[in-house]
Length: 244
Image (cartoon, rainbow, N blue to C red):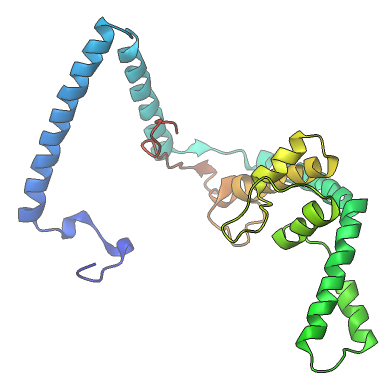
């Protein structure tokens, strides 16, 4: 920040030796101190409550070694299989989305959404909109399964469900947790919307064949026919529970 440098341009060799050397020495001393503290704890566990503690630590070390090798060497990805899974899920998604959009509940919600769109359009005008313009607005307004506003109308105005939590603005939440909650209660349309969300997550976050804005994400976006290897980045220390 002092030198107004971008993080991407920063390298540790930019730091002068007289600053870096004492830091490195203290880093080494701190590591040894921590090792002695934890080694003492491990021995206490071995003698008293949990004799397997060192075995677990060794397993974690072995796992870390595998993570490092995977990151450096890369993991080979079968791109043909990725494409096959993508196509299969895409077909399944089209079927489920069609079922949702053609359901009685969504048709009722869509009428409300269309009416709201017409009212909003009229409010913006100084004179009443012509009938042709109203027809066009009505026909062009459809239920959007990704719209939180549309889902709010569907869930609470049409289906009469009770909100289980609210957003920071005080509106009823229509997030993934809410949808899963009602899906678990056996509400068919909620189960289908939940399925749409899950398939979309796999398609966009994990496979990413239709890259779009996510150019460098997913099994497809991060590999190529010339280099079908994925070099994963494992954030081993990313959680308190040490899970990966």
